Length: 445
Ligand SMILES: *[C@@H]1O[C@H](CO)[C@@H](O)[C@H](O)[C@H]1NC(C)=O
Ligand SMILES: *[C@@H]1O[C@H](CO)[C@@H](O)[C@H](O)[C@H]1NC(C)=O
Ligand SMILES: *[C@@H]1O[C@H](CO)[C@@H](O)[C@H](O)[C@H]1NC(C)=O
Ligand SMILES: *[C@@H]1O[C@H](CO)[C@@H](O)[C@H](O)[C@H]1NC(C)=O
Ligand SMILES: *[C@@H]1O[C@H](CO)[C@@H](O)[C@H](O)[C@H]1NC(C)=O
Ligand SMILES: *[C@@H]1O[C@H](CO)[C@@H](O)[C@H](O)[C@H]1NC(C)=O
Ligand SMILES: *[C@@H]1O[C@H](CO)[C@@H](O)[C@H](O)[C@H]1NC(C)=O
Image (cartoon, rainbow, N blue to C red):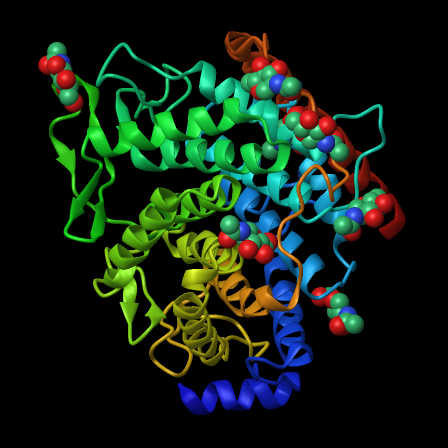
């Protein structure tokens, strides 16, 4: 196996990834190589591909996670190679309600999926990413659109509150309330509060956070939280699915960090410490691993990307909560070294694996492995750059009423239209094919 790859590397003239943490050029060279690997999965620049989408089997939500990571590369490395691609993706997927609810995703989109695209838009605002023209909604407005539609779905009809996992009744999981959907709302509300200085968002963030602790999805044991996946509403959310995923911790950590940075309240700093302490279950000598599935080799495509958002939120927290900067940088740097060592596979010689403790490629590959390695490696640069901007230093256009009144129930109708469109597109493709074949036959004759 090894010699085969050595041979392939020679044939392809490929180099494995080298990384010197602390050296910006080295980090950005690594980030760039990994990003090129990400773009191998991108269908938006291919003929017939949807702008903003990665090829199957990667779901819509993960694209939001990837573009959020690519905005970081744009910012940390000041490299605008993919600026237009990121911009086009964020605009193409915003949906008619300007809330990241494109009609054609209503068979897959849950509150958490919407949340991950809102993260990308919020990151664009916080990084002062190239703005849309003033006649279009800005990144801030698009995040507000997602926030407004999510907050309107707050459901006091069961479990004393909380968001359901799913948005649409026809998707399975509609009767499940989960941590990640609520963590997304909490994180977005906290970031909107800090950016706009509008306390209404901070109130929402506090409400959501309090609910997560009251319902016991976040359980405090001593000084650290155990954070669980969620529960069915049929038993009033009392039978909790205890799975512990790194992204629940990461997204809550980041939200608490923004709340601390905005309010300056010590209670939020304490919460940051408690979540971070709970994250020790994902560390192997400071190197991140997805403990719920990684050792059993059962992580699915979604789960293989979780350490991406975790790394981004660790980076944000290191910047926003000075008392935890050192502890977090140790984790990011150890994990970045491990991730870089795992990025030595495939025919290009720098395809990333899942195991960051192995010291070499473990044979795994995919969009999740690429984006996780990218985020952990580039977030080692977080202290070299200014932190997230707010409305006094940034330039993103907002609209507190974006998305309000957007009729989500119009989606089923739109699905029908989409299917018709697909049928029409199929017929066109067929006709083009027939003509091409006829032409080919004619030329041979
Ligand atoms: C910017 O990124 C592109 C694509 O990832 C890469 O080819 C290029 O070398 C990078 N530029 C610099 C100055 O590092
Ligand atoms: C979904 O609709 C958007 C417009 O809202 C379009 O840009 C995109 O190509 C469509 N995606 C797919 C997968 O068909
Ligand atoms: C603050 O946010 C709330 C909730 O979205 C909104 O209703 C209100 O208009 C905002 N206030 C200002 C001054 O923007
Ligand atoms: C549901 O659980 C909450 C606490 O989480 C409790 O206050 C409430 O009374 C319960 N409702 C029902 C109907 O059991
Ligand atoms: C908030 O974050 C900034 C960096 O963006 C940092 O300089 C500042 O000290 C933080 N505020 C608090 C209260 O820690
Ligand atoms: C920032 O938002 C606050 C609260 O909405 C507002 O009072 C202030 O004028 C805004 N600042 C800028 C520069 O827009
Ligand atoms: C943000 O972008 C605007 C518009 O490009 C620019 O005028 C402003 O100086 C930028 N702010 C920062 C903090 O870089």
